[in-house]
Image 1 (cartoon, rainbow, N blue to C red):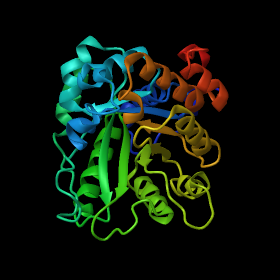
Image 2 (image 1 turned 30 degrees about the vertical axis):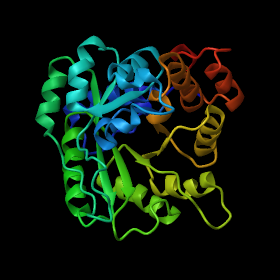
Image 3 (image 1 turned 180 degrees about the vertical axis):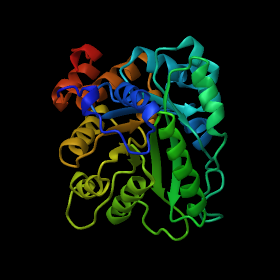
Image 4 (image 1 turned 90 degrees about the vertical axis):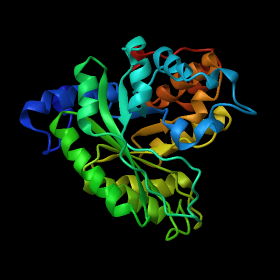
Length: 315
């Protein structure tokens, strides 16, 4: 897969002229100069509390939050996405990681049967820009919208304003968009997933993270995803990794999402960090081999097994 040059980066018109070079630099950093995104999602300590980091089937190393940063440093990722405070506590020790700051979060304690979800913005952009000015390698922002929630208008308004401000300052933006709430009867309905992709485009996001669709008409999930990736237009679509599955299943799904579904990368959390450091690092390399270099599943599995290696030099 050929690298893209600075001249080939498509810069949105809401990026101010004085921020254009910064935007291009951040886009190339985040995508490792490929145009595809390998996002290591580390925002679950708020989203799912500690159950994603300690318990049966989870390596004990995952209980220590620094495990995330060790993986991000030793593995091959595009960006490590986490809340501002999490990044602030560890970034000085891991300055080489590309960071994407998650601007809003909520816990899962209140279910949708009790109340429609609303994920509040936790801090303003100035707090993030101050960290960047202090030397933290921040390349972008992330924000979650629950489409179909009675609070969707508030979240869309917050996200739209953040994207405008982020682009004006040369940062990229990834939206997490999940249909969820009492009005939503099927969260992974293919039409809703495609609708979420279109919303992200209209809000101006650079990438949108969605759940893989679950079609009921004989199509495969990857075939249904093709509709969503097309609906996303110039907003790159990436799929959430979901709960931990065996590596062959995960890597095969990822390959199909990209080559059949038209996805522009992946966004993976638990499938990576719930493993031991060595295994997690190998999985980031296997994922990146497919995402950033178009390696075949068999070759990526060899990387995961430790029979081959994958580095940024292989892109």
